[in-house]
Image (cartoon, rainbow, N blue to C red; front, side, top):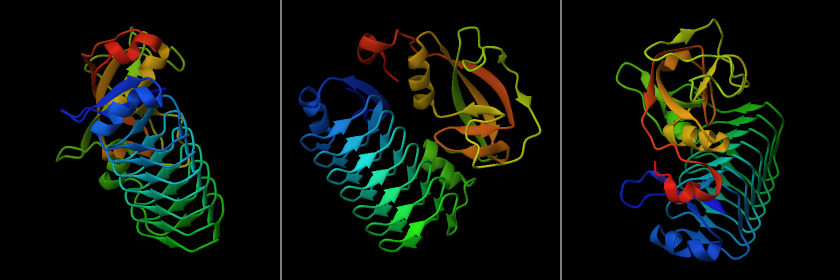
Length: 286
């Protein structure tokens, strides 16, 4: 098991490796409760004071917020995000890349679809079913056994607000609306996806694309926070991290990364770039 835990001194994410028994001391330092027979995927992030229930399943790369509670036999999908102090009931199913907001409450036996988004403080009743790509707004209340279809939008949720972006990436803009965001690239500063796009120090780029939250990995450029960029780079081995300035108005979609139509002032970020896999947790510190 390879999981990210908050550093008790500087609160940054550190990678730890071992089985549940070996990691118990690290969990205890952070008041994290991992129940017997729980299953946690590699590169999941678990916040302080989180509670993982008996036989619960946490997918690879999932993010569990501070004080979040995951119920008995609940299933959290690959790269799903559970916000701070959210409550996930018994036998709940959370889909791949779904996003559960801070303080949200998900009732027993509820089902949350693929890439669905549940807003801060929203309440989802027992046995409710939320479809793929559905969006449930801030403090919305969904009753017991209600069924919400694919792509449905319930309640107010400003996807492109700095509050929502913070919930997804834990970063804030400066007073002019500019974010400093990050990306893992090849050592020659070309992208991993095509190997053809060249990032240049001090430069930027732009294109004519409109906002569309339903497109996560389409046209445009993709950036994220520092720790997500580093985790991505580690999958490839040799990499560099670059930063760029991005205005909130140029963000096209917001997930665990943002898709943008404009960025500027690319810079390299000085971090230790060690080999991935078995030595990763010993040599890598954010």
